[in-house]
Image 1: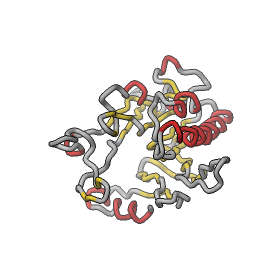
Image 2: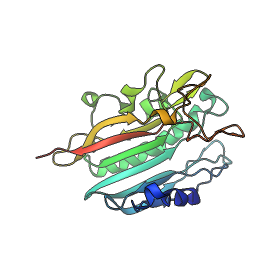
Image 3: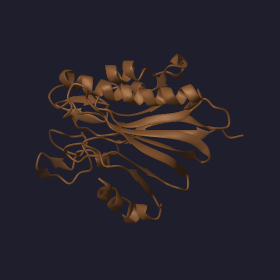
Length: 247
């Protein structure tokens, strides 16, 4: 929620950066929201809106919104969507339709932007609760893992090539998943004299990992159930580089 973000950007290591917040309260029953932290020295917000994720078959369904921020990244209009798709609680197959619906909402935003301008710079980032190979991401967002496979109807998912057996951003019962993804429109890939995708990474430094025991090398979480462990998260963060070719 917003108070968490306000506390975070006041921390000594961050306070000098002047981070700003874009946040809306969502309908999520656990009070979980999505938000964007940005540095106004590099990104200028023009507008923002939250798009509720609804379930046509269950009017009582509640989840995190899709946050859509329009702004300028050092003068270049860039759309940023922040997502936290519905969880797999109850089983991955049983809940897959909820994430497919979330993917349809995000794809509709992409399609609208790209219809206006095929070179639109747009990305979606967040915990999608599905892997790059799952239907919601691969088919309904229509992603590919290779720039060479791109066309004007696809989105580029750099996390696709990173996801391998035994490697990802979270671990569950011995299996690794890569739910945390950053997916880009064609305009962020190869536009002359513009900021474009360079590489994607998982931030999995040793201090973010459990150091000993049964769960060694898995994400060092804050809580295990109700037990406080003092770690950071049960997910590793992901990040990308956008670079402008030097003249």
